[in-house]
Length: 401
Image 1 (cartoon, rainbow, N blue to C red):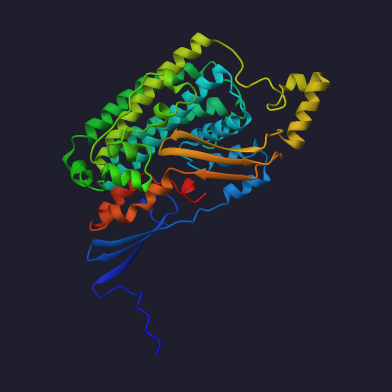
Image 2 (image 1 turned 180 degrees about the vertical axis):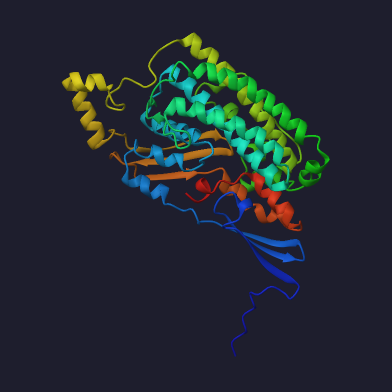
């Protein structure tokens, strides 16, 4: 006689609740199956894949240059950082570096994107928990950041600003005055946000001790970024594996101790201040460097300027070859990682020498962090699950790809 399979149904005292995929606090198409005893979470099962678009597979049929707009759709809250991370991986495979002015501009746009990402994370998490006022202060600054992105790239959200070997274009003259105003305004806004939240007893009750994690556990789960530093591990790729000359900038790595939602908020708040500090240094360097190229002048990699294409046969041939046949890539494989807003954003590329990569794999910061969600919320109430999810800052675009 065959044994009767165990029932997959919960006990009589337990209840299954679907959190998402269309729920305002899931910040995207995230689906979490909560198993409850009363309002206590016994088990939380994250289901991913609702926003899977086959980004990595699409990359195998596009040229290396054509893949850049797809990186915008990973973490759409800080798309410029995705652009920078991907082009650095391709440049590492090619063995090239972009010009000095381009490097400073890449750092500048990355730090602005980091501030914008943290603004969304803190502001929306505060709204979910019930603190609406901070959201209004913060989103005013995010709109200014998007104005700056529009000046740089011509687009606000999906910018596609970088090119292999540099940038799409230089910043316009009106960029620096607006950026200077933003630096002053954002500093005041961060101070106002801290006055509203940091010492607010309701905010503290909703976040302190919620989602706490030890340094060992955070490392074992594969945490990176603010969530890892909130647990007390001072790991930041800008310091540990410097790129784009980050080792020549003065900034500190904020670290907390318990890894709970409150500490993640404190770390991101201080990171915003440190990013403002880096942006100031970038503006000073741009003034000292002065005008110059923002993309390499190797026309086998970067498109020649339009005026040369229209007037010189050699440039026209390079333009045609790059558009129709792509860059002549060396055979090999490479992994390149940058410190994105949520942690280590890595790109693994395999080249067989053709115009398209043989394989692209994206290492998103969100995936290992979201994997620990069950451990973070088990034994807590549903309201704590909302706070933990907001503190993790899971972005479905890079989670599912």
